[in-house]
Amino acid sequence: MRRLGSREWLALGTLVAAVATAGSLYFSEVLGLVPCELCWYQRIFMYPLVPVVGIAAVENRPGIYPTALALAIPGATIAAYHSAIQRVGEGTCTVGGGCTTIQYELLGLSIPNMALLAFLLVIAAVIAGR
Image 1 (cartoon, rainbow, N blue to C red):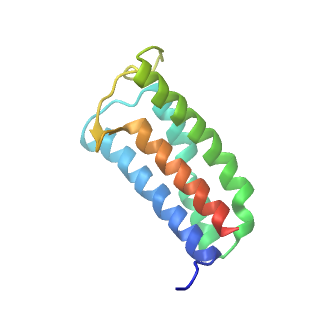
Image 2: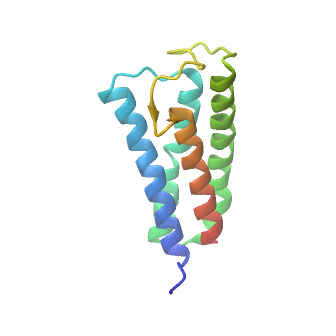
């Protein structure tokens, strides 16, 4: 069995970030869910990962990992915090819906849980690609 090279790992990370970006837009623009403040911060860190990691995949530049991790690690941290306060039910934010409100679940995962999973997969792909 052939091992994946840098380009393939980066392409996988790009795919994950693109699906997460498209998913967040689907939730807000199609389903009409209002993103809370923490959701906006997660979007700020996820959206640039698509072109950053995508261009690195096209150019086969595994050295992009510090830039990608500088976006993905804070995003994952925010998503983890958001997931935690949803489960505890305590916490506030000022934009959109309440950060503790679970607006949508898929296979038992709330939106911040899905974002956390996406960030962790991007982190893993970028590290594997270097």
